[in-house]
Length: 374
Image (tube, rainbow, N blue to C red; front, side):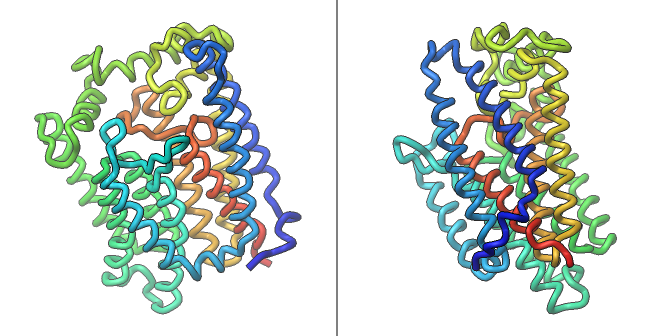
């Protein structure tokens, strides 16, 4: 199960990029918390502990052969389904039943679901391709595959956690695309998706909450027109845009951001931490952060392309899609391009579950990278 030579095959460029993003995250987290914590940097200290734990888990995911993980993919899938059902019976936090609260820390099973689904979906697709020359283009096989991802997505939507469900859908789409799905299926799915989005948007703007919770409906309505609720649901985006805009080219400086230090930016250590970067460090550092993510995604694509088998390619594709979706949605919502969904910025936002999930993803990338085509 263990590959003793793996440490000599680590993708050092990927590790360096992750370290740089984590370093930026710690610095900006200290700046974002120093005002209202009066020097008690408890969140930064907790984040450092999560980072240490993250590197331990990343190493573990790197040294266990991903083929061995695939052998237990069904067991992992059943385990995460049980957890996703069990979490629905917990006490809601901020209106969502998404966490198991253990007092000193809490665990969000939907985060772990991303990694488990990447592993199980990759193995599922590999088995389909190995058994049938039509691969996933056989209607029955495609339907079963969609159910594989659809069941946990429905449970996550029921928490409700639309953001995580969206990330898993992006993972699924990217993996079936790499698995050479027939274009006729792509066209049909795209047509259905476009019609569905149009119908849902119409119902939402009319105030119908059939598909979403009331607060989610309000968020999406305000996304199309922030002036509908400038002091309520529209407040977050307006304050975020104001902060980023006021940062200019080089920013106001660490510990000097007006919106940040006065506490006007909502969730400034988690969902809107990119707004803090924009206000205090300016467009230049924002661009550097985005470029680091672009380089990380490029490494993910490179690893997927050079994997030794389709299973490895699919794993690397899923991890890359997961990180890409997080970055696009998080940065997009801080500048008003996408609705607010509560998705953190990988390696930078505060939060143990998110950080550990992303470090596990990097570990999987290192695992696949260590076994390239010969």
